[in-house]
Image (cartoon, rainbow over the protein chains, first blue to last red):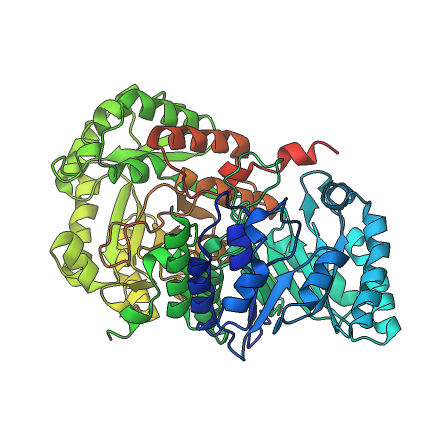
Length: 319
Length: 319
């Protein structure tokens, strides 16, 4: 009935998601402590910060210094986010950073315009420039992300075809230029995904590109985050973006309040995998510890669940 | 692949779950306003409060007055909780209350002792006394609930057999005495359930009692609440206990902190059903309104998700 993967990979986005929306700059020592704790959990990839306009996102301005000062464990890939050429060129200067060529596509014209002042079609075309930029700097093109793949507050429903129409172009500008077929990240940027819709979209992508690795970037905006992860696992999806402690939050003004949930919570998702018998390479209790550390730094109660209740390991070992 | 029900029933527990753990007594007028808002959502059953020792749970002491003052809508069943004979006798005196005979079984001996100072076996036997009490007062025996059906912080794993062993006794004291076969509520009292375990247990119960209606009482303690609901829906489960705004919380001291999540959130679960094309009879936006009202009363940010982001209806109607 289900086609669970045997191993699932998580890409931790908490250090960026958790701090980019903060109105205060937390001491760099605290953030180092948090990321160093994450490094010891067994997770394979951590996004340390972003190289975006420091005037727009002042809390990310010291990303290069933060990156330099964290302890780098060889088994972990440390990444930074860039959204334009300028950001990428800055990333090239960071020692030990893992550089992977990301491409960003939009299934919503309105969001493309809101985020980038360009149409979805213009964004689609421009990704070829990114491919060329990555080629120029010998950075492998690894991932194509489709934003708002399930729906958009600004445009409403997003059709399956809107997403699948992008696939031939993605193939053309990657495989067509001698690259491997990239991983496809289906991003539920505004929390529109539901389990059956997710399965249906994954199935539609596989009909066209059966060999494409599919990952998801799911927001828990409307509470279906882990149900969607379970549905994706049933479809054999083995890659998830997530944020420890459920860090993040949705900055889109069109949500009802500013208290909307962010990314799915890493440790809750890891717990789900464990209970389904799926390996993650991550030590759940260490991850809960990292969640507790970041909650101490940020204050308040974070939306992650298992960080408050504790894992089942100590109860099971009683027997 | 899935066997979704066409209609799902929710039993709202928020008025009890949300206020029983409060340290202050909120004005009765506020609670009336909240329950009256719930009554207008289309939900079919609301648990107004409980008839338990007022010294132990002082915030439930005015349940009879609260019950008398709420607006009773004919399509809604208004219930109260009792845990012993004395509580039931008090419930008999409440005008317009819906009386349904509930039986409580324990799959954990330690929890039975902690909650009732009796072994699970003693509790099992005593349910026959409840059946007789219900018979004496012409109250239909409708529901058998199995607490800690998936695991227990005090005892660890709970085996499937521990649960299925209770089924013949349940049949004997109900059908054996001329009653209908009751609905079975599988209660994940301490947040041990996972989607596949839940499916497996439901399957095991159905192997023995194929005609038994199965419902679930799921806590979101470890974040898998809605994933578990989705799994239950895939098994055709059509009855869920839930709490608007995700009210409640787990009073068990053996959890790591006191901030653990309570019941699954009604409006998030209703949203899930809607997105799966399953009818609930509930107006989601009215339910979000009720969630907002209770959050105003209690203060703080409640764990429900869609109450903060808003439903999708206003975005969809744009098109």
